[in-house]
Image 1 (cartoon, helix red, strand yellow):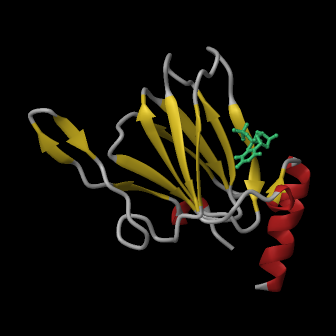
Image 2 (cartoon, protein in one colour):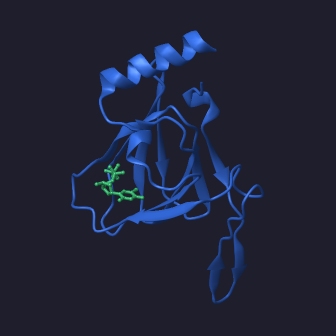
Image 3 (spheres, protein in one colour):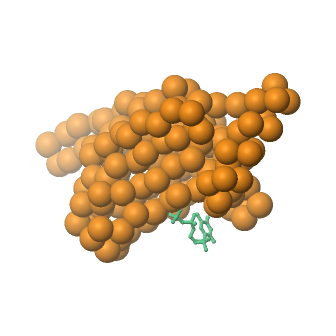
Length: 141
Ligand code: TYD
């Protein structure tokens, strides 16, 4: 089962010209999975935080498409906080990681590339249940 040390910030391509930049994300080239779903968070009120859940199977790449925010990762033992503030970096979150998103700047857009379709059963929304899931997964390893 993954730890926070398996989650890393990936540098994406940035194709620059005088009329602006383009960043491209292709399956298994810039992102280590096949993208099955894209969603984005926006119009986030000041002081609000999002996330506060884990996923059993889902892997994601989280990009600050505009503005900035912090992502705190927690594997039940260790925690780390990553600030995303450039659209050409993506935070790769492996399955089995609890995450909190906070400190959204005004106008921030959080773009999420996800490895699976939406499935409510893949969510673990209770922190104690998440810790039980991590312990169980470690025993089965
Ligand atoms: P959720 O993932 O809990 O949001 P966050 O972690 O950013 O606070 O999703 C919020 C709501 O949106 C929830 O009711 C489920 C719905 N939703 C979908 O229907 N499909 C999706 O792909 C996602 C990501 C959320």
